[in-house]
Length: 336
Ligand code: TYM
Image 1 (cartoon, rainbow, N blue to C red):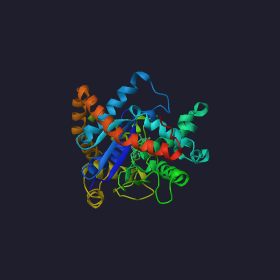
Image 2 (image 1 turned 90 degrees about the vertical axis):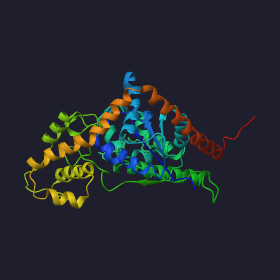
Image 3 (image 1 turned 180 degrees about the vertical axis):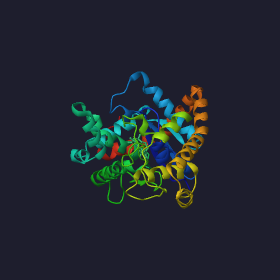
Image 4 (image 1 turned 45 degrees about the vertical axis):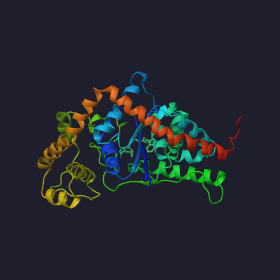
């Protein structure tokens, strides 16, 4: 029996933060023994906002090193670069022609990002979820593990697959498999350190709002020390009046590897002065081995490039036949 398949990716926009790690990569690491994992660097998605050509490729390599440093094993999982497989862009075009524009106008991330960019919104920014649907459906995965913020994009992916199957599939034989999202309860929404009601995000202008995986112990300690809190004594989960408290306790739970009940019991009588150094130390220790491995990998570019070359070949072996299947179903059947 072949293993069930997983597909997921992260944009190559700068350094990764704790939200990317706890909401996505950490889950992939746990799943890779049981699933056939396809994990990629979404560099074509990165250019939906302006990127410096001098750093684009370097950011891709850094993200590959981050995946491996966090525990993705290239012998078990396929790690590849989105732009190295033209199948992604080609399938996106085919999907463009069956996707109603109003499906894209509804996307929350588009509305938020478009608002920030004012006059300069590109067609690519709006079309982004269609490319994401192509990324996913090319590999016909069973599950797509992501954080909560990607839920709407996955619903769109399912809608596009459904429409394609309806328009071009045979009654009992759909063209493409429709995947399920996998969104864990813990870690699915890591919040900003400066506002517990906003998600931790690469695009937040304040560096204080997030902990990057490459932050030094001093920077981590300082950011946690300055993190927004409240005046209550005693720490608790799930109080809607205390979003920062819930977020920081959640981080402690995930990074210390304890259960929610154990953390609730340990912290219920603590004040912030006692809890913050504990969280800082736990974060520094959790990231220490990742950072050491990351530095080692970035010093061995030959190895990283060989992982990506292998990944490309493995990914293409799945992506090309899927693309051809869609093209045939849509009528691109001329041959010599
Ligand atoms: P991106 O690059 O914004 O984020 C990558 C992954 O990290 C998760 N994430 C979070 N999880 C919890 N809390 C947070 N604060 C947080 N911030 C980010 C995201 O949910 C995601 O799982 N469109 C995608 C990239 C993409 C993709 C795909 C993902 C392109 N094609 C196909 C899956 C499948 C994105 O921008 O993620």
